[in-house]
Amino acid sequence: MAYPGYGAPPGGVPGMHQDPLYGYFSAVAGQDGQISEDELQRCLTQCGMSGSYQPFSMDTCRLMINMLDRDMSGSLGFNEFKDLCQALNGWKATFAAFDRDHSGAVEGHELQQAIGSMGYNLSPQTMNCILKRYSNQGRIPFDAFVSCCVRLRALTDQFRRRDTAQRGNASFQYDDFIQVTMSI
Image (tube, rainbow, N blue to C red; front, side):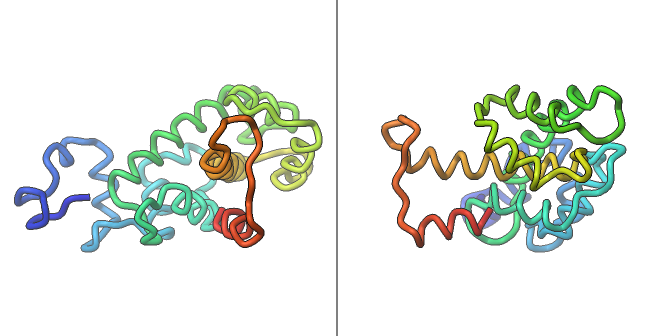
């Protein structure tokens, strides 16, 4: 990101202020121009990203930041925030498409269909692990759905970086594996 005096003209990055998301971002980002996990929770609630569902949990907000925090600051700059909003809009549309009864939760088979619609081809054993992790009495609320999507995306991105031949196989050192899985 460019800052005034360091590659950007006075007044910030050109075009940034015309973006409708910038108002939500700047309302909570503060002087540092970054959004922390509690600021992200507040911002996503204020802009309606959580819809009529409960506000995102702090754990889900932390996961979202970790997924897109390219500069490892522990917070999101505006461009990272925009990327997150794009991903969230996609996940929200997918969730709404599979929450057929509009209850605010998807059933296990709907979660499996939703994950498949996003291009993931997971084994029944893997889906069972996901269901055990994210369901509450067989139902997965929106916050848990987003948490699942964040982890799937982040783990897939990490795996793809190591699967250089794109064959579905990657080698991890133990320490590397722990770092990848603990950061997500």
